[in-house]
Length: 250
View 1 (cartoon, helix red, strand yellow):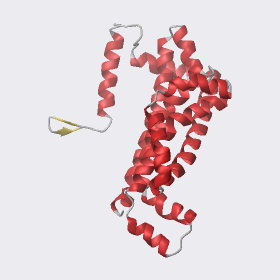
View 2 (view 1 turned 135 degrees about the vertical axis):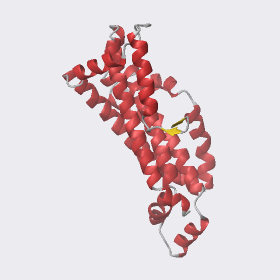
View 3 (view 1 turned 90 degrees about the horizontal axis):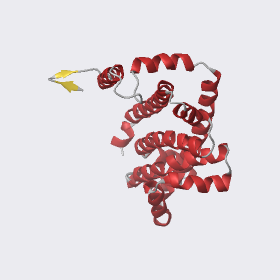
């Protein structure tokens, strides 16, 4: 970030917003927005408690399973759509519909079909993440240099070998971009699942703290969630920059 010709550190914007948050909180303009320092004090108090650790484990388990299925299904489907015109024409309208649809409206249907447990939450998380992964993977495959595919065919590469050695690596920049956005959407999906399907994990803590108007506790848990999403996003963005070589060599 540049201000008046001076280049500031990358985290400067967060520091500035944190300072503004602290000022507004200290002025006590709204009970909903406590001072940032009070939130961090509360966070240090609750972060090691059994309820917080239990909620973190439940949320992490649902998130990990949901993103695993989203990646393991979304990438092969995206590659199939990118290389097969018939599959693309058959699946693309549905992928676009689910990507643009308000998926929260499907939660009651998932509750009826899969119950009120972990399975429904994992499926909700997967549905939030998978569609953008499919579309980005498809876009990456569409941009592959045809000479790479022709080379694989001329050497008699099997479909699996072409998938793992040509399509995946050549489309890797777009795949990682889709995974990064999908993981961010999955954070939203897992919390919605834990709030609407089964009051567990961080969803249970949000419900408890908001019902009792414990705003410092509420924001402390929310900051942990923001930190997790930000860390995942930055890690995957770092991987994207590392594989820019593949995009330039396509």
